[in-house]
Amino acid sequence: MSIDLSGYKKDFPIFERKVRGGNSLVYLDSGATSQKPDSVIEAESNFYRTINAAVHRGAHLLAEEASESYEAARSNVAKFIGAHDNEVVFTKSATESLNVIAYALGNPQSEVHIKSGDHIVVTEMEHHANLIPWQQLAKRTGAILSWLSFTEDGRIDLSNIDEIITTKTKLVAITHQSNVFGTILPIQEISKAAKAVGALVVLDACQSAPHFSIDVKELNVDFLVFSGHKALGPTGIGILWGKYELLEKLEPAIFGGSMVDSVTMQGATWSSAPRKFEAGVPNMAQAVGLSAAIDYLTNIGMDNISSHEHELTKKLLAGLSGISGVKVIGPLDLKDRGGVVSFTVEGVHPHDVGQVLDQYGIAVRTGHHCAWPLMRKLKLVGTTRASFHIYNDAHDIDRLLSGIEKVKSYFKVSK
Amino acid sequence: MELDSLYQEVILDHYRTPHHKGLTSESDIQVHHNNPSCGDEVTLNLSMRDGKIVDISWDGVGCSISIASASVMSDLLIGKSYDQANVILQAFVELMQSKGKSTGDEVLLEDGVAFAGVSKFPARIKCALLGWMAFKDAAAQVME
Image (cartoon, rainbow over all chains, first blue to last red):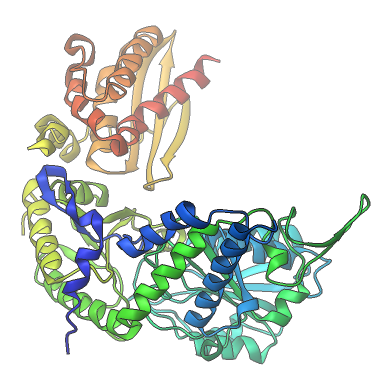
């Protein structure tokens, strides 16, 4: 059953503009960042227009209203992922969220921390943001980084999971959905293996939370991060969710105002979570904007959004299979697959593919998608990637497919 | 079409049959440069005698612009003195920074003027400069 979400595109003002060649915009780069509906843009600007004040400080009405809006945004995020309010930390990005977790876990003063000889497990398909912080943590602590590999069609290879996740494993950091392959990983299966050996699980939900319904309890993970800007929300706002008892055991990584319980010239003590992780005046308007994005998404319904993207993925995969010289990098079937499709065009570098498509108003991502080790393993310099959100439709797929034919004819790629 | 100003026929020709591609067995120096934003890579061998560029060979993976540019660069610079090569290099860099306002000095840059259109596409300037910057680095090291 295909879901008709065509009425929502008009909520996104960016589609009113023309792009290169005088074309209307076909935006197929939501995996990098999503476009914003009017309601989000208004919520963010209305914060500045009507209630702007530093939250959690000041005795005036504006400070009160700003604090209320900011905390309401936190509750809204918590509800969105099935968490408690005090488990949701606002950061500036998912990247910052992951770095904060890595720093906290590398601090010997944290009640729970990584030690020399501990094993940290990632996957070979991680985005750099969920790889480098753990490489660095391993370096700082003397821990050992190991990884689960992937199969030829871009699915996680769990055949040797017992050798990779062992009693030495203290932390497993994995992506929910590959930003290159579009594969949705079997998180419950992996977290079950991690829990069996007492390891913590960090989930990168950047490519999942904006596209389908998630629940931190069902996923059985300990930490989860995602970014606001990929979920129709503003830039400059990221989410760090952690189980409350764990957040309480971690030392903060960023220090300053607003995160303290008491301060003397000799030292300081921290507030409870989540406040101790939010030093400084936070990105308040962006938190409120993200809350509006969550309202927008939940009003449409996450299940409707994922069905819609599923249909688009199906149509694109079918279309690409009919073009000679085009190879999909990732699963060809629709099982456990999100709305991200990577492909190569034989004889044409991804950068050139993207450039020709841009001439026809089609915005795609090209290159290694911040997953360089994945590309190296596949011996690819990069791919061209189309990724969806609610404003995409079947017409966009048609334009992309005909654009790829134009790429081939422009670069005189026969077949 | 705007695209044709980027992908001049000369560029596509060099892309399809790049010159001096494939590393020679001997060189004074080898350098490796990459473009971290897109993953393009070039390895360049340089041989110099008495302040003159005797040979350039290179290999790498990259888009049409970066491959064609490395091809044109080696054509242009082999046989030139270090000083002449720097003049040509500077002229090419200035052309890339011209934002589409310069057509380039054809006497100096020969096939290199075909890249004038690249300067209107900010994301592609780095591609065009990859091979040239590898040469600059290699030559500076030899001259040290």
